Amino acid sequence: MNSYDVAIIGSGPGGYVAAIRCAQLGMKTAIIEKYATLGGTCLNVGCIPSKALLDSSHHYEDAVKHFEEHGIDIPSDIKVNLKQMIARKQSVVDTTTGGIDFLMKKNKIDVYQGLGSFKDATHITITGEETTEIEAKNTIIATGSKPSNLPFIKLDKERVITSTEALKLTEIPKHLIVIGGGVIGLELGQVYKRLGAEVSVIEYMDRIIPTMDAGLSKELNKVLKKQKFSINASHKVKSVERKGAEVIVKADNKKGEEVEFKGDYCLVSVGRRPYTDGLNAEAAGVKLNDRGQVEVNEHLQTSASNIYAIGDVIKGAMLAHKAEEEGTFVAETIAGQKPHIDYNLIPGVVYTWPEVATVGQTEEQLKEAGLEYKTGQFPMRALGRSRASMDLDGFVKVLADKKTDEILGVHMVGARAADMIAEAVVAMEFRASAEDVSRMSHAHPTFTEAIKEAALAATDDRALHI
Ligand code: FAD
Ligand code: NAD
Image (cartoon, rainbow, N blue to C red; front, side, top):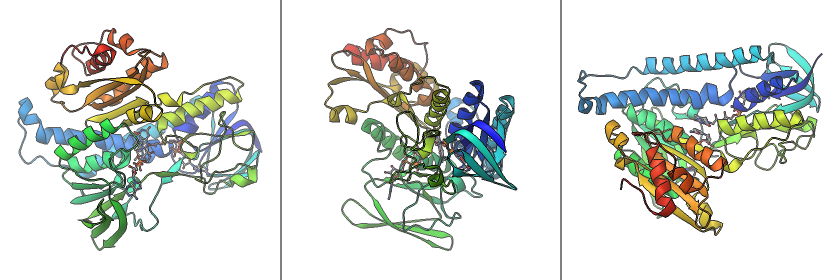
């Protein structure tokens, strides 16, 4: 039987990064994946394919809506080739997952294909084409998550679908009904909106992206309405029925009146649930909590002391970069180091256009904590860069401690916000004040000038260009 210092169950961004870091630290490492390709949700049916389709659909939308104004004449019968768009997405996925195979080989990590199941705390049975057993001194559970559903919805995966099917449709929906105005619903909703679908978003809470700063929800809501999305917040979905090629969704609005939505596809995007099916966690003494997450302590150690868990299968944000940080954290912990993660500084991004990005505390959280803070906000439309590219929507908001001026949160909607948020993360990691950021030179013309201006506004209300 093969014996390892560390075995990792699951090869998503949590698992494969943990494996690389373990190998870098000199540990004999194995990774177990039940699917034929490595990379987990993120690479196969998550981050990467969704961004590939967002990019393709963005090009199409630009061609249809903006090329003429830029002085580029194109034929009036420009068309979407959905088959090619989906094929390109798949080739991006294939290249990316192939890259993980390369990294596993490069780092001399043994890859086992099959379902990993605990026999006890130091033995794992792997059921693939053949059944194998391995021994591991330490194990990292990185089994990720699967889409959640509402109890009364039957997902037929043809017309009542999850994100996985939405990434490989064979036709553009005429009317896509999206249940859940969170990250997946808005990103994939925007893909099909750009390609010509009517899109209706039904959200249970009183605003879309309800966990983010309310200012971001309001701005994104405004922009999406301009893009002709139908946004229906404070709606409680009560039934989803498929009749042939039609899907009928009934919901109660805020006043308790029934509203009916008729479409040809319904995307259910109401969150994801931790995935531990077939893991046989009990056999290893690993406890789950009442939400089905693997219970961990501050070292990400489970109730079995040689078994750790990371990523979507434990508490916290379900984000690839959070899983990656935890993978590194656990590898270094096993190696006897003392790593650290500041969960407050894990950024969140919605890859709609304009993009939404956030780090640190929201205004709602600061108010609830009773902290005194000041706000500096700067609109993207006041930037020369925004006018040059016609990306006028959005703003950057800097929240800083009223007394010390330390930055407590940065929230933005705008072109390239996903990349810009890194500046705020760096500043906050080094506990910068708003004035520190306002005194740093930002290249002109760039979108990042909005961060400097918002920091100036937070320092003492002295933004320069507004
Ligand atoms: P996963 O990536 O879910 O990987 C777990 C792996 O474990 C899977 O491959 C699974 O097959 C395997 N596995 C499970 N059980 C076993 C077993 N018993 N034996 C063997 N293998 C097993 N996050 C971002 O940060 N940015 C984004 O832009 C983004 N976009 C997304 C878009 C979509 C449509 C979706 C669905 C998700 C997106 N996410 C995004 C979330 C991101 O994909 C997850 O947070 C991330 O993949 C979690 O990583 P993980 O390693 O914890 O688990
Ligand atoms: P989410 O939590 O972002 O959004 C789910 C939405 O559904 C919420 O707004 C919630 O209020 C709403 N909802 C819940 N129950 C409802 C109901 N009964 N009726 C109507 N609305 C309801 O979850 P998601 O969009 O499904 O994404 C799942 C996970 O994947 C998220 O945790 C997210 O972090 C991750 N993800 C991240 C990215 C990214 O980083 N860009 C992209 C996609 C997914």
